[in-house]
Amino acid sequence: MSETDIKLAEPLAVEIGTELEPYLSGDNSDDIRKQIEKLRKNLKTDKGIKMPRVHITDNKFIQSDIFEIRVFGTKYSRCSVEGKDEFYTKLLHQLYLTVTENSECFSSTFKNAKKKLKRMLKKTSREAYKFLADYYTFIEPDAKERFHWLKKMAYFRVPSDLKELARCYRWGRGCKEDNILADKFWKKVRIKKDL
Image (cartoon, rainbow, N blue to C red; front, side):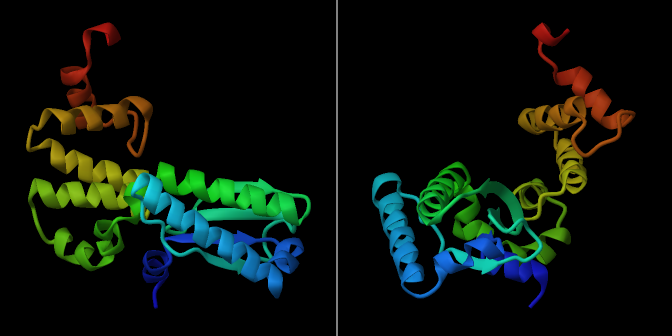
């Protein structure tokens, strides 16, 4: 299984330092898993968000009292903790924030993204370019690739696409400062208060 396939199969992952391992062994493991399951049910009932299963693993390369939450392999949050109670409290809180702030990342569209990626790379439609821009925004964040697909979308002259490309240029996200095409689009779509 490739690294990308693993990211897609385990969209929500927690990596813990070695000092935190005892808090996830034996009865402790059952305790936190029950709390995570309760959080999943509450999110589904209260907010209609389907929280994916949480893959928890140790990581000897991070500080021993740290845990990190990753969304599709990309680090989303990092917390230092002291003691089991603080670990549980912070972990549940950070999982809640991660899922509610990134709920679109856990939809079936994104879970099946890898299957669609190769097919979309062969197409030359705005829909395909939009998918690819979203893929490099949410699944495998890559500002340069995202800018590339936004630039292709711009040729369809949809105002919202032109504005998004212009924003990338203005903030230097994924493009060189001297990108002529982005500069051209930026000058066309900027609003009067920016002049």
